[in-house]
Image (tube, rainbow, N blue to C red; front, side):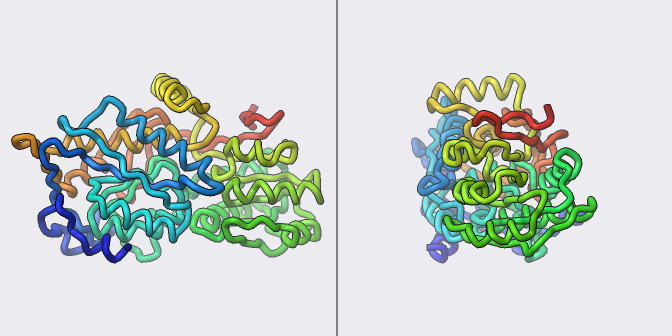
Length: 401
């Protein structure tokens, strides 16, 4: 499927690749991107993809993100053309990310929201780049998507959230200064998100004088048996257990950890901060510390979004992270499309390179805060991007208070 997506031009697209050689922006070098010009027939919708996890244990993360992105298109169009959302399940995995990208690109989308998980992003980026389709992730935090191993940065990738070069050090500082942790034991998901967050926390924690004890251990998604890791933690006697992964695995892990040790502090990131964690872990989640790579959201734009989201979905606006960021991601795409699309007798013409450039020029006071992209596609608009929470009485409370 991936090969088909790379080769198929599609009935709606025309024009040759206008980026036949790599180029640079300052100290950032870009690889080749397959930008073309897309024509939308009179009366036909403009298709925008959404790559998210909509099945399995993590659908509690992915479905709210889909709903928020769709909400951004309510009552809007692209120069008189309706918006059609093409939603595909990327399962929050590398394999799923590649598969979802292939399916989305086969349907001749002009842009996409997502993927939402970093492992899926890394696997999907080459496909979006080859087709010249810009995609904006609301929630991928790993450093790797904007600092890829290949050296050349992907022109077509952007993210609204902040990367783990910010979140990891903030967690490490909190562990040292607020939790008085001198030793930490790391448990992590082996995908791009877990491994990247592990590295960012570890480097900052050690630099700050902390010590990583025992052998940090990785696990694969869908793991449920953590007894051997818990035994190793008991032997290492750390001040803090640091967990880099998602709530689906954090739930059984913390239950098994608390069965053996009620006192060791637990710190995790945005992948765990979800109401599904508090529901699933129950009393064992009490006292857990969790971070989000964003400030506590307030302001008129967030309140307007939150009210609309709750009315449309019946769900709380803060039950799952990155819903406001998803709304902003879709808004950025819609705004850019309306700026670059040209109308001729009811037909739309969309220059995909110009669309990419317009997205990169975005300055948005969004529902999740200010968005401004740098040359790598990272958001550099915010001033206070990391918030720490502690679970008390089954609720997330600002740990700074």
